[in-house]
Length: 227
Image 1 (cartoon, helix red, strand yellow):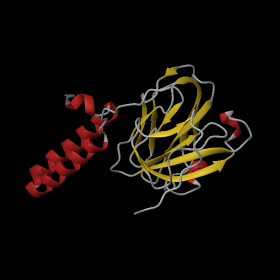
Image 2: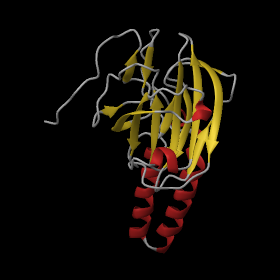
Image 3: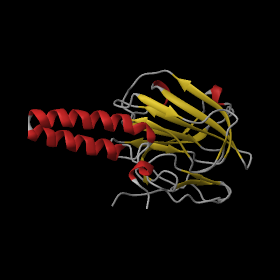
């Protein structure tokens, strides 16, 4: 059974300490305010949780890099600096609200080709233009099966800090924790050319577990209905 230090991301402890200190001061002023501070401290701990995930391990699988809801699936031409070619690719966008796990995981094993930081705005991450307008950090990976995949951490209306702990030429594994976005955000994944995702808009993702794509599968793009 993991202890509290294993299930909270290291980036969260400074914020938890600040929340706890403020809660203590509020409790000294008024016990009711102290309870409010305690509740906010508990939420902060909840936000920075880093739960263990069971990652499917088979060649050709690409998993979700984030918890959240698929807010958009589009065919787009990737930015030239990604070096993904000039043909359209499927881009799966995942929106994270403030209650989702915000620890990000590598969607596919390979070698990091480049890490690109883009300055930008802080629009609502659920908007279409957030992929191009917002502050973001993009990682491009050459997979062990020869494809090239890009995934981007995108800041949102509330999220103002992106943390990425991997660097070019680093070997990464599927499901490996690589970063975090605070406090509400979006993740985009650019799938290999000519492939269709196994997920649909509105579907909930679990980082490191939900399979976005099986390169060896020829199934056409899925459709869904809300019930």
